[in-house]
Length: 207
Image (cartoon, rainbow, N blue to C red; front, side, top):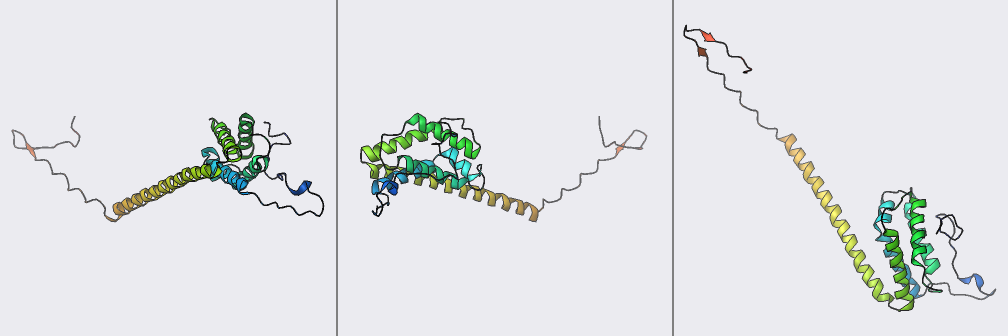
């Protein structure tokens, strides 16, 4: 899907969704998301959070100071387009192209793996499981468990890096505080006496 097309998401542009716009004047419409819509939103959020390429792009701000907002915009677009369960399941190839183009346009990042396709497959699977099979609670619980492991692993990695940094600092301080003991002077070579009783001068460099 070409990001230049009018239906492709672009950060900074309003995202449209089916809601109260078609309601008759004077009729109050409950626009709050249903529990099943919240399940899809949570699933899509976790899927994007666990996308390594997008996570790195946001962490290192490849998309500038608004990198996190751009990820949130992508999430909003997915929820607006597919989060109501109306219509058929999104086409995985079109969705993969959309994700690939979005990351390239907004984060100046050209993906060299198939991660966009993998994320698209996860989103399509979430659509089927939540809206068609009605097993959203089970899917979200599985995603939450996997997401928890990723966050725990990340925290442990950061803690290990901090600990290793502290050990390096302590070692440098010890080396500075306790300088190595001076080496004893090399013993002076014994004088060599020739047959006539004269001392022979010994050169410092021997061939």
